[in-house]
Amino acid sequence: MIAKVWAIFRKDMLIELRTKDSLNAMLFFGIVVLVIFNFALEPVRESVRAAVPGVLWVAFAFAGTLGLNRMFAAEKENSCLQGLLMVPVDRGILYLGKMLAASVFMLLTEAVVFVFCLVFFNLTVWSEIPWLALIFLVGTLGFTSVGTLLSAVAANTRMREVLLPLILFPVVLPVIVNAVEATGIVLNTVDYGALRLPVTFMSVFTIVFTTVAYLLFDFVLED
Amino acid sequence: MGKSRLDNVLGVLVLVGVIVALYMAFLEAPRERTMGDLQRIFYFHVPAGMVGLLALAVNFVASVMYLVKKNRWWDSLAFSAAEIGVMFMTIVLVTGPIWAKPVWLVWWTWSPRLTSSLLLWMLYVAYLLIRNYVPDPDRRAATSAVFGIVAFIDAPIVWFSIRWWRDLHPSPMIETGGLAPEMRPALWTCAAAFLLLFIYLLRRRLFVETARQDVEMLSRRIEMLR
Image 1 (cartoon, each protein chain N blue to C red):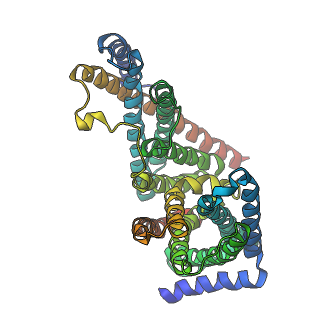
Image 2 (cartoon, rainbow over the protein chains, first blue to last red):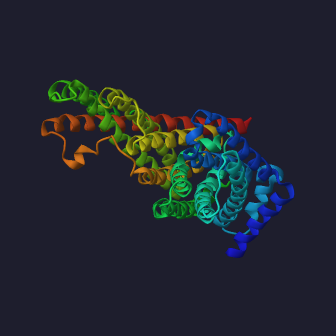
Image 3 (cartoon, rainbow over the protein chains, first blue to last red):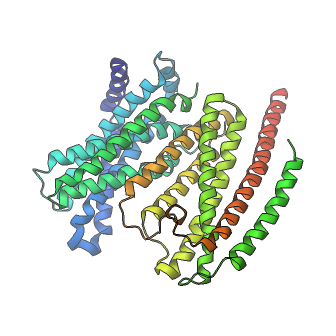
């Protein structure tokens, strides 16, 4: 099963690394969001540090949505989806492979956007990095666990790209809330024990929705 | 299935129920000590919330049943329930701020109860949106059933994710027993009237939806014959 998931994952990674379609768009969009927030938060310049976790996760979520939109839209070109569906594996395997690929794209984007954020908002972090990496990882997995499923849902509709954020953001709100909370704890406090609750929550969310999506994925792909 | 005798009986029951509920809520129930007549919005706010949640639960069950049985009737039921559920949740979200403004001095506050109600409403508006944008009936049924299941699982998760936020909204008084006994008959009458209304609307909506699907199928057949 792992080999099959890996094959799907590798296919998506290869395509992306050769074209860099999604990654370029995601990165640039993430940075654009940061710049916009910089101006939006101008009136509260002094206390901007408190807003950074929120800004970061909005940028991640927007950039992530952009990437998720491409996941299935790209497969619709040249009937790639039909080919993919003919592969004799469980549909859940397709989901897991795609979800992993989406997570890796998002994490790469997050790493770069985060560096830009440090520069734009004049932050210095070193010892916090492992904690932030953990939070970004769980938060991203939570985001893509639902995101990959709903990306396939949106691909079924006439509105595709427009619809995904509308249906995805209400569902992933619990992840965003907890990710912002956890990032805020790391950036603005010293009491890391408080991290346990949001991180556990995001992990549970990821496990629940990965399972649900794994089971339901078959129904959203057309035969 | 046209308009059956049961529907007529239900219709009359709803009419009588609503009149009795209005009487109970506005005349029979005592005036609240601090909030005055304002508190009477409670008899509409709370039952609408209960029936709204029930409608969303119906949507969930029907969505699961559709994926298991692949019978279009379950899809129609899920859709009808979601639409009516959104309507009742809208009543909750409209009556809430009207009540909150004079009592809490704010229209809205991001308390757990308010936030999760709003999120719930958004999830099911998203559900209706998805249905709008899938042209193929079978695709539409499967896709929206999947989203219905995801939305229903998400609802309690939303609640637990923000539960520790400061809450201005009182906990359900029915659970805590904090509701004055004199107010209970009015509340339950209103809840019963809303429930009857829900069942009536659901049956009518289901009828319209199945009729619409029949027309859709027939016009397809005609299209094929040409």
